[in-house]
Image (cartoon, rainbow, N blue to C red; front, side):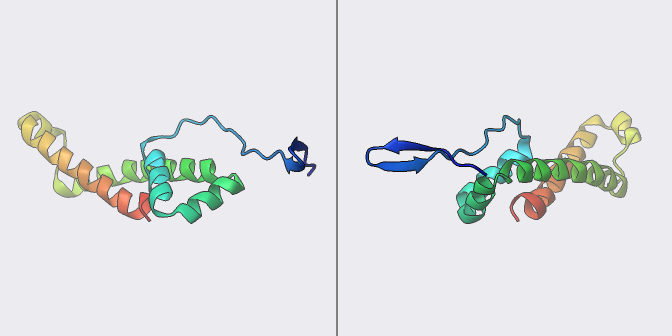
Length: 115
């Protein structure tokens, strides 16, 4: 690894830069980043300076979406929310689906994002 320096007054300072990766993070990746910044600044800075922050955030976001795709059908099956209910009582179906979605997201936030 070769360092280059620039002169600042009487001092030679190394030219250091964190690689700029233009990656669009999803909802859960952005939430994890905010959480790390505000509540775990040492871990945030360690990941940032090692260049692994973006990789970590993308991993958390992907894992959250995968878990959500698994949890929703399981919870719908357990609670009897199906197409028959949707056809019979659409308002009740929406109410139950919103409840399932909110509970599944709360599980994800507690286990993956805010851990």
